Length: 79
Image 1 (cartoon, one colour):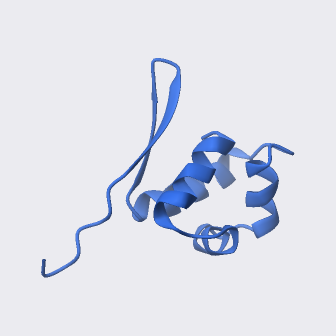
Image 2: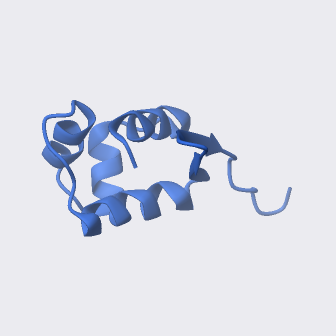
């Protein structure tokens, strides 16, 4: 996951840094630092963030050297 992908994913699910950090069990500082490219992420931290966003309908892809983010809102029960 790249910093741009994380920013795009957050925008897609309309969540702020604090909300995503809480869902992933990381600090808001960690998310902000990574998004502003002031530091990298440990593998386990990246996986926590990806897992939290994936549950919300985000899919991260890397096709032909292009890092992409796709978003499909989860189906609502009873629809």
